[in-house]
Length: 444
Image (cartoon, rainbow, N blue to C red; front, side, top):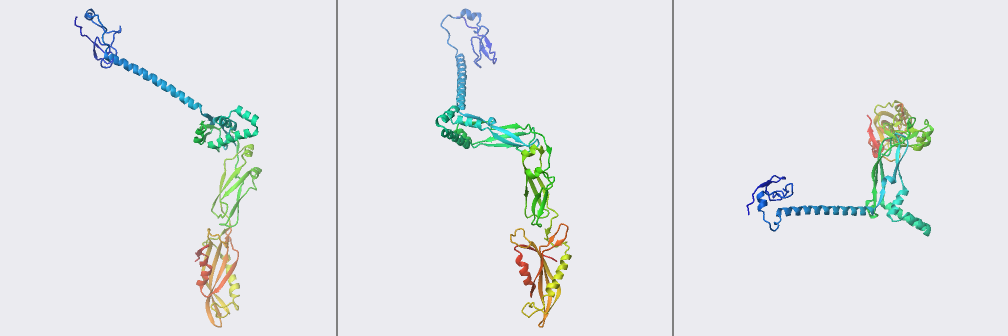
C-alpha cells in the first residue's frame, strides 16, 4: 500500500489547516468539502486506496450533526410552546365580558364657545347588555322570563343588574369640565372596583381617552356685574352686605343668583367677594357669553363706630358734655344729693376739671349685648356744705359714637355716674370691670 501523500487543505470558515482527507474543520466544525462534496485525494491515494469495509465515521462530524439536530428540535419545541400559550391566552380572554368605555360614555356640552361646560352621558342600554352577558342572561332568556313568569322574573333580573353595577362602583372624571372652547382637549378617566370586575369576569377597555370639543356656538360678551351694587346695613364693624340689582336687566333679575362672602360683621376696608350662578340654558338662548363668575368689592364710606379718638374732631360732642355737666351736676346735685362719705347733703359744687378719660371699644370676640363703644370722662368737683368742703368725682358716659361717611360724629345719649369719694372706685366700676368685653384706651 502506497503511503498517502499528506497534503493539507485550509478551512474556508476560520482558515485553520486541515488534512485533505478530513470532511470538517477540527477547530470550528465547518465543512471543508470541495465542489464534488468529497475530500480530494491525490492520484496515489486513489490508486492505492484499499477496497474494504467502509471507514469509521469521523467523531467531529458526528458531533456537529448531533448539535444541528438538537437545535432544530429546540426550535420546533419553542414554536409548539408559543402556539400553546397563544391558544391559552385566547381561551382565557374569550371567557371575559368586555365593556368598551368609549361606547358607554358620551361627553356632552352646554353653553357657548369660550364658556361651555362638559357633562357625561352614560349609555344605559349598552351597559345593561354587557352586564347581562356577564351574568349569563341573554336577551332571549329575558324575553322568555317575561313571557313565562311575568313581572317578578323581570324585576329579579333587573335587581341582578343593579347589584352588579353597584358592585363595580364606576366613577367618571372629566377634566377640564368648564370654561371650554372649540378645539379644547378633554381627558376622560373611568375608575372602577377591579376586584369586583375580576370576580364577575369583566374587562373594561379604554378607561382613559380624550375627546375634542366641537360644535359650540359663539356668543356675545355679557358682564353680570356691570350694574350690580353692593349695599350695606348697620355700622362698621357690624355691617351686613346685600346685592342691589334694581339697575339690572330682566335676565339678571330672573335667572341669576348671588352669594356674598363674607356677608356679616363687616367693616370699612374689608374685601367682599360676590359670586354669581345663572341659568346656563337661558344664557345660551340669549347667546350671552358669561366669563366672569366673581367680583370683589371693598367696603368703604360706611358709617363706623369710633375705635379711637386720635385725630377726631369732637368739639360738638364736648360742647354738649359741658352743657350736660352744668345742667345735670352743678345745677342738679344741690341740695338733695348726698355728700360721698355720709357728711350730709351737697349745698354747692364747683367744677375743678377733667381728671381722666377712656375710650372703650367692644371686642370682636365678645358675644355680649351692649354698646359698641363708650367714652368715659371722669371729672373732679369741689363740693361744700355746713361741714366743710371736699373733692368728689363723677363720670360722664357717652355711648355708640358713630362717624359718618362725611366725617361727622354722632352719638346715642349722654348720662352721668356719681358722685364718688374716690376716683379709683369710679374707674373700677365703669372701666376695669368692662375689660372682658371691651378694649380700653386711655385718652390723653
